[in-house]
Image (cartoon, rainbow, N blue to C red):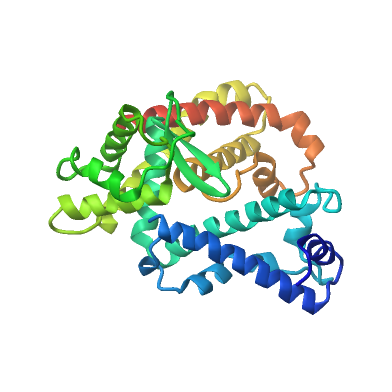
Length: 336
């Protein structure tokens, strides 16, 4: 097998040989398998929830790294390595750099597969994210593409080992009551993590969702998880709060922007379509890349140049977005 440096140099060429491509696929798959097995051994992943063997799951997670453009180039790898000098990097640094990419793809793939095969867990994860935004008692931290949560305004104790899932579940089981809501469970989790000093205070988001589902199973007789209706209602409530907040800010900003002639009525309406889309993505979905105002506004205003956006719209829409975001979080705290 080619050394990693030579492999990557060849893979970032316009049309690498098929033998090199096969070696790259093997390298990515083996790296992903090792990472997944560590997750399984640490109790962070249960293949029973996914119904795939570890080798198939590994390949599924990293598969989009092998997508090509019309010229036969591997675009994702080319973009990822564009800002580096592969020829000059130390072997250890180069391996760490590629592991970061593969680990991120694995974590993203697990989220996607959970969404497809375990929608109740996906909805629980979404409700945890909504609660975090509404209450601001946790921060979301990215580690090699995996989302961890940590209580705000406290030492994360990152030098200490991560707490085992079984130990965290047992600690929470001793404190939670019956029919706990997700925000209440998050409050219990925050209190426990703050009060202990034996473990790191960062915990994986998916692991928290799995523990919460187990706690629901222990405390609720009728169902092992919150019902689809309850989950949908929580998301629906957050969506309605965001829509209502956008209308509230829009109505009060009408005089300053439209009646004064600063912005035409049609463009002003577009502003709030974009702001609402961004808030729903940020607060409710929390998936993928951030929504960029220019990208969304240009969909509604064909031909809008970046220069025109910067001069005439950027400061206005960003200001309206900030005040709408702050008010939406304030309103969400009242119901979560």
